[in-house]
Length: 403
Image 1 (tube, helix red, strand yellow):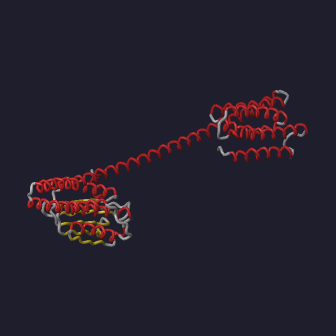
Image 2 (cartoon, helix red, strand yellow):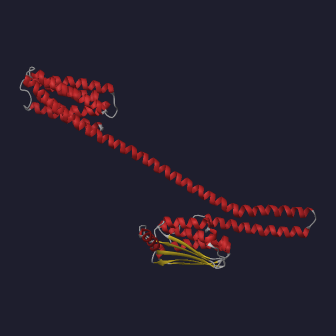
């Protein structure tokens, strides 16, 4: 609506059409009246390019007033010379609403145009009753139509501007939510890493400091055998710290990016074999390759977390990791012969809670089967396609909807 090139085309085409119509005999018959009509048309086009055009899209009260006064004179003189020139209203009314920038100015500009046309009719008709009635009728209908149409278009424009504003606010709010979500995730990961370091490396290093101080004191007091025993303890604790550091690295390392899911799982298992020493068997069916990338990442993270829990708590000698097809789509099972635990008594720990949340977001189900001294089995079920619910989740939903 505010593109100047379209207004240029409209004004030039409209003015040229009116001039051609007058030239072909649709206007006044006298040479003087036709000359006045041509001058009025040229003056209208000139007023548009000099006064109105620079104000399109950049509201200017001075240019609005100047343009309305100019076209009022042009319409009065032109319509007085020939009533046919009242057709310039077709261009004048829209320009009044565009330059006015507000509904109030649009109505005022329309009233000025209507008054100029009516005055031109009256002057051209010698102020007879017929000329005045014709002017009132033409100007009245034109004013009513232009005002109604202008108010309608203004309402649409305001509605569009409001929608654009709301869209900008929504986009900004979504960006803020994404930033806050990212910050929260990063904060939770930092807290988790801090807890892991505190519970493992920090405590072990504190013990190393104590043992080193004891060995130094014993050495200064001449207790060679005791100092040697303490040094041996320091060596053992340092080895334990190295193992804990490797386990922490394996736990927090990025998921391998191999194109084959099975190769990525094998890479994860190899890391834990290197520092834990437990035998880890891997079995991956073709169903894993049918999963989309997001669900494969969920399974890989679950494997990573499960093996990390085994290395840290289970003291297992054998672990099996299997991904196979099931009724739900894909089933991941991590089974170890370790010490086990009571899920109800411990609450499952932070790692298991994180696994359950990750699986739930992917539309799957998560369960842990364990008991003290009986090992642990972790099961993750995921649908193949994003919109496909698992059997367990569908049953749970139906149970919740049942009366």
